[in-house]
Structure formats: C-alpha cells, structure tokens
Length: 135
Image 1 (cartoon, rainbow, N blue to C red):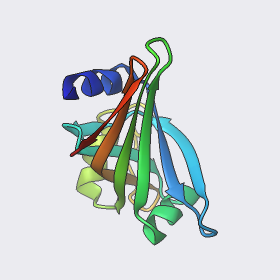
Image 2: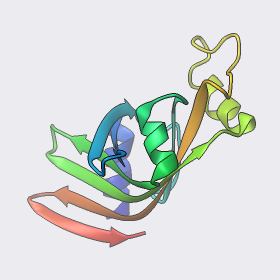
Image 3: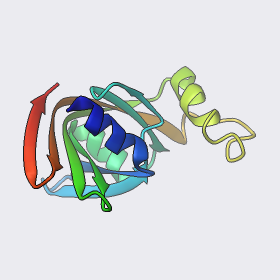
C-alpha cells in the first residue's frame, strides 16, 4: 500500500496543508508538493515566515497534509505535527536548490522558513475504499 501512496504524492504538484487558527477552526493553504521527503513519515515544505499558517503552527502543531489525484480518484490524508524550522542550513538546502532563479541573491531566514511535517497516520482512499495506516 505504501508504494501506491508514495506514487500518489510523487505525481502531485501541490499539497494542501491544514492548521488550526486562533479561534480553533481549521484553515487550508495550497503549497507546492514537499521539497523533500523521508518516506511517508516526514515531509518538508517551504513558505514565508510571516504567513498566518506559520503563526498557527507555532501556536498549535496539529496538522494535516492532503494530496489528491483527480484523474485516478485517489486521496491521501496525513495526520501529524508541523514544526517550523528556521535553521539557515536547512532553508538553504531546500529553497535554493529548488528555486535557484527566485533566490539568486540568497535566502533570508527572517523571511523564509521550512515546515517539517511528521506523520502519525495516513488515510488512503482508492477504488472506493479507505485504508488507515499507522506510520
């Protein structure tokens, strides 16, 4: 099953990140697919430091990452925690290699950050069935 989920993620250009806002409501943001992954357990995303979502993750690390393949009618919902990384070395590694033209003058860790998502479980929907896998 893991290879099917891995293939689903690999095919996607975008991911949907969910956080909990100050009032306790879920919010969703579309971002580029993970810049780096360690299997299905850990995913790294890049974003601006001053976004509402980053503020929400600093206050409440509960998160969900969602991938969808419309053509195959498959989805994967990962549940876990999101940590805001501000280590310049990690930012350099993940942002400059993927976005060299955008960050040609360098990456300012005050402006950009890396989000590290650690999954506890994934719900995979395919062929009209849902399977929950503990990671």
